[in-house]
Image (tube, rainbow, N blue to C red; front, side):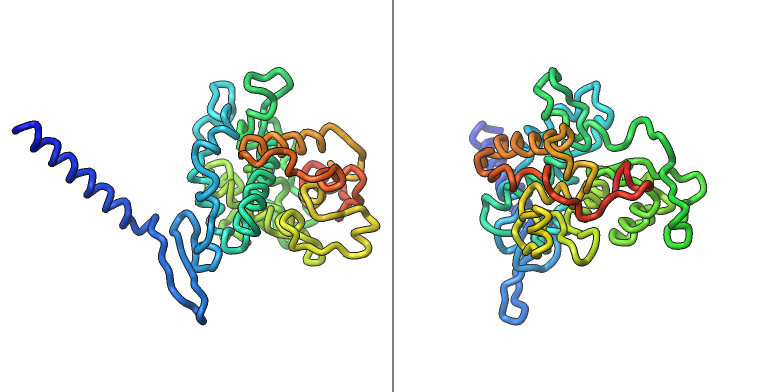
Length: 319
């Protein structure tokens, strides 16, 4: 066969491959009108018919190489969850919540800031980095997918009628935003339609589920009268007079209040709070947004904020 024929055949093969990729039902954007409004579905990248999926979604501004930059050490030999976390698992989980505004609210800068903020929380909870670690202390997020040395089984008998502990189950910390206690596994499982009360181990066996549980936690208020971390961050939440008196304002600081309460907030500039903030600033730089877009100290910090939900003895390890 002549060289020219080989080139022609290879060219045709590439065209066919390109056409197949373009027509892949898992990636093509579908469009329809509902009550006069344009609705879209991008498959795994933005799941479900919504106006959000017609616009810029997370994969348009946050791609695989950026995920690799943010979590560059997660598959190092010394990491404890090598091969577990990946970009597609995050996007697949995020796609379920993009129609609700996760990573799709506001302009491009706000979208990028929200993804940076969420992943900063994830990184700070799953990091095995330290001050002199190779690559710096903020390059070691997603090192873990579970608590390595649980001090207890985290079974709270107070919830024995609503979320009874399953025989032999251990409710120690698992996931991207760690889940602790039987009642949290129960509530998360109900929301995700997965039996996590009887099978909490599912969270450390499936990265998409682990990310999904974390995004659900980010998008869901602890109480109906309170904001979710998402709403506090993107500006959907309007503080009440009591919130203002309690120094709670929209922004990154209040996401820490929502997620951690008085374990991090209302205690001044403690290390645990500053570590989370530092991850956020580092991620803003890596995402190309720049830490100067993080806002003033009172927006970034929760040092002086009154916690939304003071800890009880059973949830001091994690809520």
